[in-house]
Image (cartoon, rainbow, N blue to C red; front, side, top):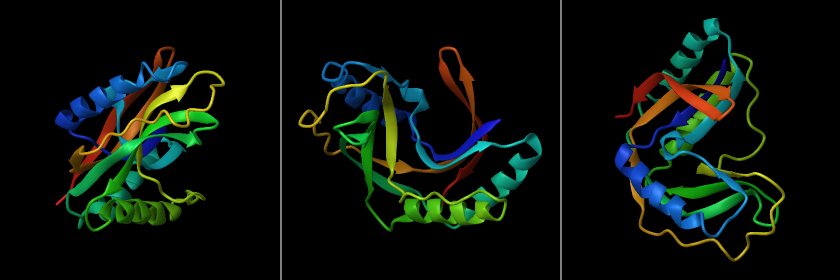
Length: 181
């Protein structure tokens, strides 16, 4: 099964993020928008993990986050990967308001999973929430990024999640959840 590890977002914040996403839809055409219930902050994408490996992944994740407390995050605005000139992913960019524990969690998880043979990510960790995927080559989105100040929320849970690819898009199933603090 395809598996990733993510910071979960509470339902109240999901409603706020949905409104922010709705404000982008009239501006950006040619984007397949993600359903808000799928919003999360990916800490590590593992790819295929067999059933026997899930327990080890869960134990490493739990150990990595067991001493961490809930993390305060702030929405900085909308952005694109790899760039606004060549967008493939539309996202909400985030920053931590606090001790940098989300970065610590990601680093600890990454380090722990290397013991299972997972390669560390070559790019620096950039906390974001994917809210859409560009369906076709789109024009530059430079200059059209709306401001989304004052959306703050707490990350209280880290989860190991299975991703199933279906004709209508991916479907997520939470396998293990670890409460912070």
